[in-house]
Amino acid sequence: IGLVGRFDRVKGHETFIKGLSYLINEKGRNVRGLIIGEEKGISAKDLILMAERFNVKDRIVIVSERRKDIVDLMSAIDVGVITSVGSEIIARVLLEFMSIGKPVIASRVGVMDEIVEESFGYTFKSGDWKDFADKVERVIERGIDRLGIRAREVAVERYSELYVSSLINRVVP
Image (cartoon, rainbow, N blue to C red; front, side):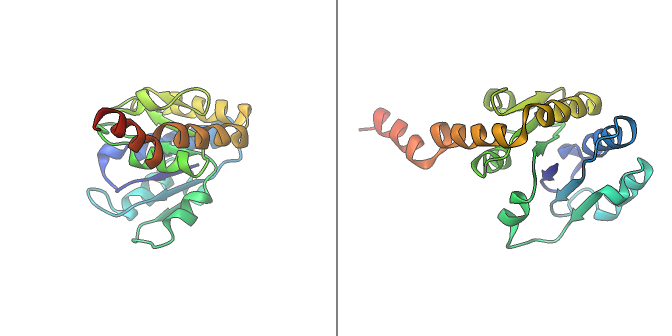
């Protein structure tokens, strides 16, 4: 389960870590977390300490340096997650996860609720780590691969350059 975004409080890393802790320590799920981003308002050390506090330090990998192989790292993730607690005006990471065929779970902020549908993922109440964890379980139970295929189909059908340019061409001759 992976989260990609700058290390900043608005990105909801605590929700992600608490949710993983609940899945692992309370529900007995065999999941691992990957957090990828650059240090902004929170340091990698802060995230490690938080993971330690919630007893999941050995189940989370944190990548804090800028990488050229970001697509490879994202491809290694089974479920893409956006746990933001503040506005998400542009859903770039969400669309990137979808484009590489990953089911998504996103907090209901900004445009997330308008894009994510149950055919390929779920939304959850922002900051609610238990709701987040429940949605992870639903994705696992429904089949990660099947949901990922649908996420890719929706990304191509509705958000690809070809589709968007066809919309523009209909409006602007």
